[in-house]
Figure 1: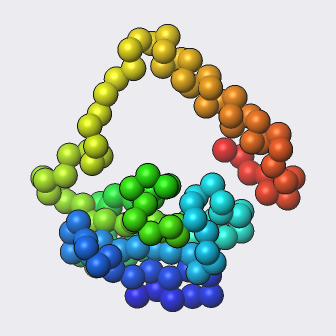
Figure 2: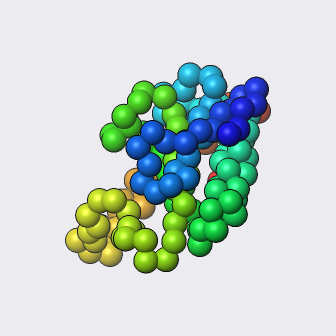
Length: 133
């Protein structure tokens, strides 16, 4: 389907819907956090192309694009799912139960922890790999 120097794409063996495609870096990378900048950019450029092609080729209303990291990752190699979607296709949001934070204060605290982790990662990142997030 897609076969270039850094990235391949192929149909999932157990698709959610016909056309469910996996986009995979050739370089062994276990999870998204391990993906280096140039390959990250190349991988997600290919994901963008594949998502558009899946939608156009199948006449889908849109696509669902996702990756698992460790939990629910059936293969220990980074892969991005591109799933064609149609209105009223039976999938409801994400594939797990949804919940709410106990309070707005709790939500703000969680957001603060994530912001602090982002700031820490940015402070220790290689300057050659700096991007605006």
